[in-house]
Image (tube, rainbow, N blue to C red; front, side, top):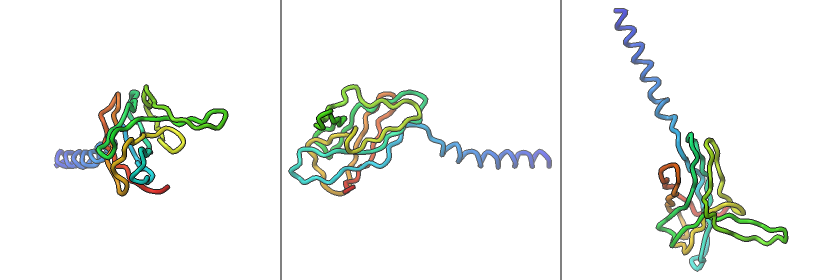
Length: 144
């Protein structure tokens, strides 16, 4: 009888621990993907999001692609001393150290959607990563 109680106790403990282990996923996550609406004649639009690295090693966002864009580039916006804003591609990508996040936001780092083909609703973007598997995220077109 005592062996049966011990076995049931161990089974109950295992059932309790399994969901906790399943919910403690580690990896690269993407949240809050969005893009401002642009008119159909616009040659480009920007995509913004937050990307987090919960892995033990470095991860670099090296690029992106979407069927909703002719092509995509990772860009950094800079303002010089004269107040002139310029954008330049991030040729080496965006490095995420373990345990860090980066927000791609207006006026900073962003994904540039060249030749956009979707102007309302949402579309999927595949993020290309060095150090982790590619991630597909949904981007919502909205005024913010």
